[in-house]
Length: 187
Image 1 (cartoon, one colour):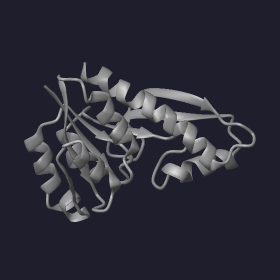
Image 2 (tube, rainbow, N blue to C red; image 1 turned 135 degrees about the vertical axis):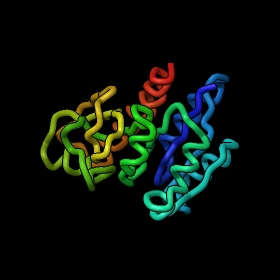
Image 3 (cartoon, rainbow, N blue to C red; image 1 turned 120 degrees about the vertical axis):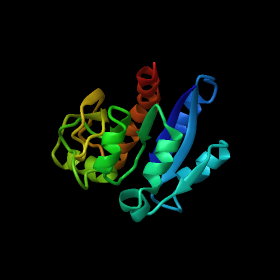
């Protein structure tokens, strides 16, 4: 049985797409969902799908080692960041080499780094009049959005697009491709 742990900070639509994708796969288990926000809807999504879920604070994540202990005990085959906004501590990156992946709502290396997430990315792409955008699925290293790229998928940016229009198109790409890439990595 392959195990996935999901880390998310918000609504959890990518987490839900992953949960749905693997719901009938008897060789893959989403064993835990963790969030840095106690009110994040992703925790409710996990509970509705009978997946253990909990939140944690910055101290438990970076200093006290509680999240590290949890992850060691869980021993996942893959740790999936699905809209998780905190930087992963170097100790975790070293503990789980090539086992932590992230999805970014742009074509890295462009529009990456601290503060470049969600609507911030989409607004910057629209303001810069880019002709295309997309998603990047990459390994996590000790720097924001600089880990080795696993896959990228693109979509057009239309002249009259708003950041919301682009966000909708990006979400479609994420929900379609992220679960499939996770499955390929587990194989």
